[in-house]
Every structure is written in C-alpha cells, then in structure tokens.
Image 1 (spheres, rainbow, N blue to C red):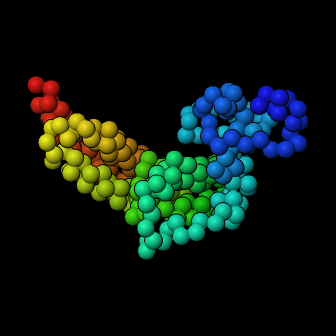
Image 2: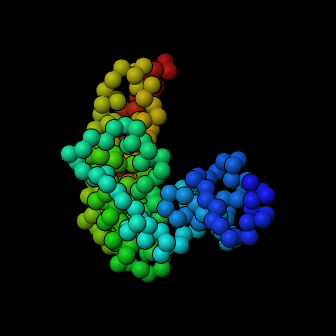
Length: 231
C-alpha cells in the first residue's frame, strides 16, 4: 500500500470504503467523501469525529447522489426490504451522506440545492422501509437551518412517536427482559432527549415540551425498574 502511494503520483484515484481502521494507515485526514467511498486527496481535512470524516466536493457528491446513482425500488412500499438490506443502509450511513452534503451546501449559501438534497433523502428513505435513526434527527436539524419548519417538525414528531412506542413496550416487560434490552432503551431515550434539545434550540416550544415530557416519563420508569433490579 505504501509503495502504491509513493509511486502513484496521483495519476489514478485511490479509494477507501471506510475510515477509522488500521488499513487506512492514518490517512483519514486526507479523505474526500465522494459517495459511498472516500477518495485519497492531497488536501488535509482533520477528522473531528467518525461521522464527519473527509472533506466534501459538493459538485461531485451532489451529482452522484442526485443524478448518477440508481436507487431502484428502495422507497417502494409494496416491496419487502429484508433485515439484511435495512442494516446495510444503516452501515453505509445512507442518510448521513445526504445530510452532510446538504449542510455543506447550506454553509456555502446554496440553499436551493441543499433543500433538493434533503427532499431526495426524505423521499428515498421513508421510515416504513428504512427506520428512523440518529441521522433522521440530523436531517431535521438541517431542515430547520433552511427554515423548513413543517418538514423538520414532522420528522421529529413521528420519530418521537416511534421512540415512545418502543419504550412503552420495553419498559412494560419483566425486569430481566428490560436488562437484556438496555441498549435499545438507552438509545430511544437519548433520541428523545436529542430531539427535544433540537426543538428547543429552534424555538419549537410545543414539540419540545411534548418530547421532553416523553423523555422524563420513560426515564423515570426506566430508573425505577433499574433500581428494583439492583435491590
């Protein structure tokens, strides 16, 4: 690998599928996100966290996500998406690709294309097929930046209902089950807390109060069950 990098002289592109592992040889700061792979470029962009690795060439990424890639029947609700493919969409961080591009366009003042990118992601990844996740919350945050309040509120309200339903189920079970589902419980709680905070920052007081109330209610039940289990 080092020999290739030493002699390639940037004549042919070198791509990595993922970051943050020994195989990248510590070159993550020189990645450029170009879709579902990172291109090695002679431009240093320090990694702030593993969700935002690589610089973005907005024109390249926009063309690929919006024009080049063929998404097939990904958002066709009449077609069954099995667990393997749903997990694959999570592993490749599909929503995150769109959100990162949209945020980059927003920073550059290209609000029209940023809105188109978010709408494409929203239409392409309905919750019924690709369940809401952390990046759905990030997408709502990007919609707020574009003053698309209704769309952002819809995402957070719907996801809040999902978290509420999940927590009601988990916390209604016996204590040994609650212990086995602890990671899922904590994830749903953290999402409710995160969504409430985003609503507060963006002055969506009514939705903030509802999400905050759901968080406090479920958190108290969770803590009570945890305390009884430890006795």
